[in-house]
Length: 400
Image (cartoon, rainbow, N blue to C red):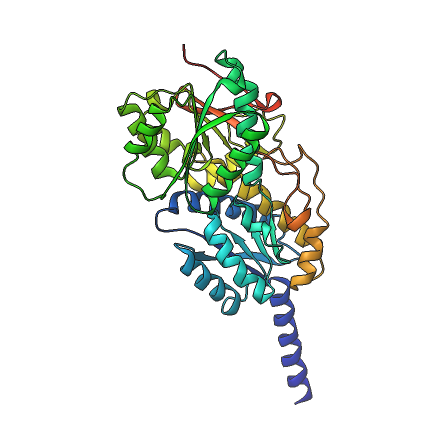
């Protein structure tokens, strides 16, 4: 009896030990996987997935395999519901997401009330980190970074490139009217005033609009030289198509990320139409890789996993943020929320040390104070980096 009992308890102990050695730790992956924002939502999630693959291949975090549990943030209400499910039913240690600012704002409030860390890797609206939440951290650059770089490009590159003084330009600011577009456009207007630029049109519109012809006419009649559009994919395509149809050819169009960074947008609009259009967004792929160590390896990992090249820099930026966060959590002892927060707050990655080119150190409101964007231009059907000079692979081209 005693021998039998000892054998049974020994076997049970071995099984428990083996289970503990190969335990899983679950994290939520909350993105819009369906609906209007699904393309960039899925693209963003792919960066997180590659980061998890690499972390698991290296032994996981704290000896445990990382398992991602998806949540579909198709709209704000579902983002809230999915956040609740991930926390209460799936019992995730933290949530990664979310690309859409509105979805992120809604879901992260649920996480905050539950005391669960929420890591934003791609949404840019001010309000994401502006609420002073304890458990919300954002690794990516945000609306102020985008607005400032766009205005700096106009004043320092576009104006001299077309032979005008910055104050002589007529600027038109158009934007989809959610938290994303509103945040960026507000910073554009403020920075434009600081740089002495003349904003003659400022107009918001619903992202789901199906006709922008009246807005194109307004810009044309006001003699706008430079259009700044903050948009998603469908409204980016719509504006560029209808501006072309109306024969409206401003000296420059500068997109604020979103659809302007995507190859499918260029293909839908036509490379002859989008050629010369500028964009400020997360780091993309035709860039001086001396400024973005590890970018080539990420692209190869992406191709191997998904069978194509990355569709946008959203996947790269989600990868960079997720990889760094997971490595930080690996240095902690346990997965209690406050333990994770302490580990993340200690992060100190210098500029130029990641595949996106920027570093990571969390400052006020848990915003990454080292995050930055880059300026690109569509040239020959490809989005090439043109600004700042240290990351550029080509100069800005101007129409004859």
